[in-house]
Structures are given as C-alpha cells and as structure tokens.
Image (cartoon, rainbow, N blue to C red; front, side):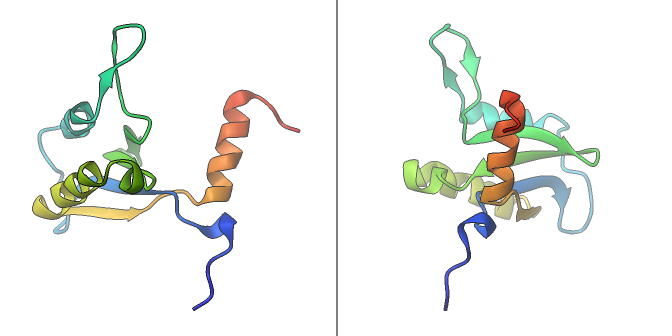
Length: 113
C-alpha cells in the first residue's frame, strides 16, 4: 500500500467530551484534569501542560488534543490516553494533518512569507 503524502499525515487525534451515545462527559473540567496528569513544572516553577497534550473547546465541546508523536516519546502515556477514551466510551477523531500544523506555526509566529 502506498504511503500518504507527508502533508496528509495525521499528526494529532482528538478525544471529545461526548460519549458514544451522544451524552456530555462529566465532570465539565475533565479535559483540564486529564491534561493535568500529563503536566510538569517548567523552568519558571509553574505547572505547564505537556506540549503533546492540551485541552481545547471545539464547537462548544471540551476536548483533548493528543500529538501522535507522544506514542514514540512516551508510549505508556499514549496508551493511557487511548485507554481513558475507550473506557469512558468517548468519541475520538483525527486532528490536524502535517501541512495544517505547519501553517498554524507560521501564523502563530506572524511570519507570512
């Protein structure tokens, strides 16, 4: 089977705060709590979310974005997040592709060249 072009490679997946039967997942701060498990103290001695796992709101639904590179860096943490979604019957979906992630980095940096 041919490999997907680099631009089409999925670089993240989303755990949505909605169960498979369409009910909102509780408690309402579940995403922050889950990301807190993956956080660490930064150089400024403040707690920071992992660069590989962060909470977002998409279309009014709390979600957790997981960078797929986490699987190589910390396989146990990656499996933990997948297991959390499965055990709690949460919907998941693919996130950004590589090309869109690079565009977002450029836009955040303010560089449009």
